[in-house]
Amino acid sequence: MIPVLFAWNGTALFLARVFLGILFLVHGWPKIKNLKTNASNFDGMGFRPGMFWGTIVALLEFFGGIALIFGFLVQPVALFIAIEMVVAGLWKISKNQPFVSGYELDFALAFLAFVLATSGGGIYAVDYLWPFLYF
Image (tube, rainbow, N blue to C red; front, side, top):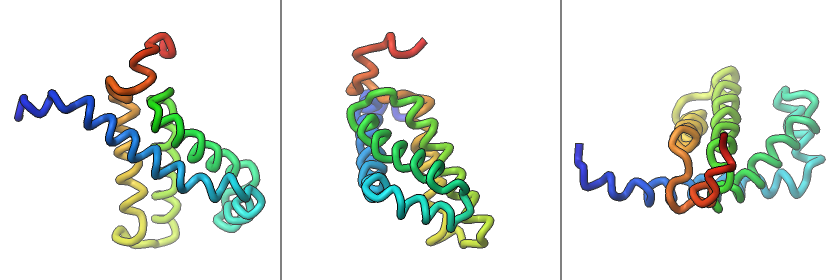
């Protein structure tokens, strides 16, 4: 272990949270902007009803991304994102996509989200200022 690095824990969680938030915000925006096309895409992938699942994913990615950026409800949002990305990765595996240029990034994002779900957003998160949000 390198104890001096523990001093950077809050900064590392902040950077991970903001990076993941921006990533999901920009991927959620096209989905939320055109829910009809998004629903059709989800139907085509086999997630039926597409309007239901596509809307849930669009809302989670867009508003969840915003929440992560600000550090609001980090643990539940990150947990849902981790679940979403595991499902995406497993879907790609079921379609025989390769690990590289296939599902590796889905699982990398799932693991990053899981780290945030288990660690919280850090000292630079709104959650840190309002601890009563959690039981």
